[in-house]
Length: 362
Ligand SMILES: [Zn+2]
Image (tube, rainbow, N blue to C red):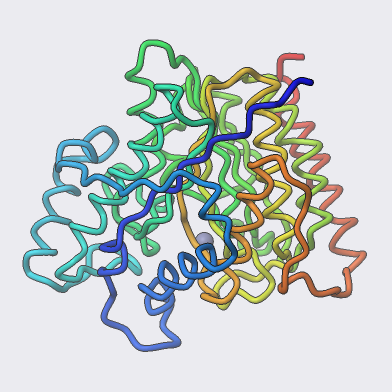
């Protein structure tokens, strides 16, 4: 009898990821990115028993040099200095606390550790449960609750390994990862695919016409979905865009900006998905690693601001990555699907496909 080797997944965290807290009361946006997210997620995963199937690893602290892989020295110096001061504004919705630099460097260290473990072949996948998040941080600007772009730093770090030529980043956070998109906009070796909520009345960043520039043209793929998009729209975008785009690009490594704020109960995002979608991302990315012959995937927490939803959401992703069937979890309520939104999303997905098609290799 052939016994298939079980997927080995590292769970990378650090208790000090709890420390940083911005000085705002609810309902300020800044108040939602708080230590409770980390604590509740870890407690849920512990109590559900899934952590016993994972390899627990304590995140090492990065040095101040690693963020320089993508950020300007001025940004890195400012984050350090303002953490010493212990307060003050670094950018839009990005404020310092005395613990900021420690938490931020541990998160960068955790993301890089995940890459290192995948590259040595010790594990197939890693999930990095750390904070603060990173995908809004651009080369020179902290913003949107983000200071160092953890996933972008991890991608650059991976590309320094001579066996890694191409990296794909899948970002399913509710918001467009403007920082990651900007950092790699001209890079042909990093494919960025972002699923996000998009306002077609005000047209901000994240439109599907943003394809990358120069040699990087065709490597920036935006899937701008409508507010209140349900699970079925995500399923369709995964099948019609994410899977063919990954198969075309054939990355050596997949990084995931794992934001859980598209959950229907999230106080910040306005989408309408539950843990079934988060299982699907785990399931499909696990399969893609095998089908494109990538070395593995490294998931790094971005958003997700309902402390009761973040646990089941991450749990579902991990079950999918382990190669197990979709679990029935307490957040999976039957909700009415708005057919108009589904139809409009199908049109949008069709337009995305049309726009990126010239750049896809069959
Ligand atoms: Zn978000």
